[in-house]
Length: 333
Image (cartoon, rainbow, N blue to C red; front, side):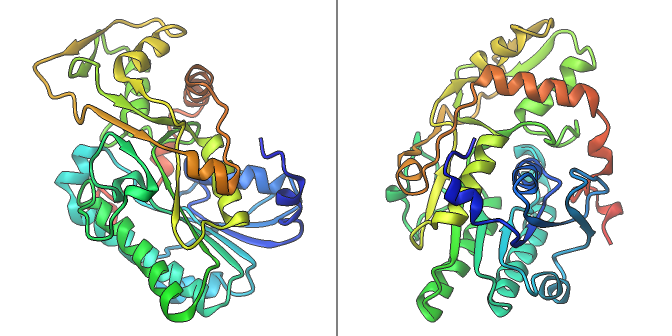
């Protein structure tokens, strides 16, 4: 929970736009802001309503004229919209992931500049980093390769913000790089879900045993969406000093620990398929800079977060069918 009253008061009666406000992090940002008398508008291509206090706008931010229209007379913009998919589908459908992401980011960030939006926060990704064990902002180098191809799209938007800072001396754009975020409202599409929603989907649909690739030793930083949403709000308020900050749990959990934690409150059988790859051995975010400059303080334990996510999923199993799926070309206009 955000403790600083000054942070919350700064949003009082402000006009705020949240792109991707129906998504994993976005809906949590929306809920927090709607509870503190903020005028919130959500723009999304999902046919989902997440908060009755927010104005839901159905629209495509790959359209520049639309972006200019919706950012007019806006105080703050949370640019959280993106294309989320599993590592497998992101590799097999590069264009479906890359092209709309670049278009969304370029258009929204430029529209905010042209309309003199007071503060903007852009949600990048851990994928903008090169592969390593522990991700630390000071280790990042501009000429390094991103973790994967999709990371280029996120990196390009960061460069756009950098260009604004250099040419126009704009320091009102903050950037955050979240890690593996999970929680209510996650993408539970079995065709392209990430690890936690994929496991939950298969558990609920009685896969027996649930087969997990690798030996379970791979370590990841799993961050709960509400914690990350608080970090995003604080990043907009405090700024990120013309750079970016990491948002994660700051802890490493093995895939085996993840499965065992799920198994502690859900009854299912599982086995590890050691003939399959485990993935990169370790990926953890150093969140010390975020703690220092934006007072980021994630508090949700893995068990608490998984229970909340599971309960939400059980009651909202089909929501993913109402969401825009960029990986189904026949549904794209």
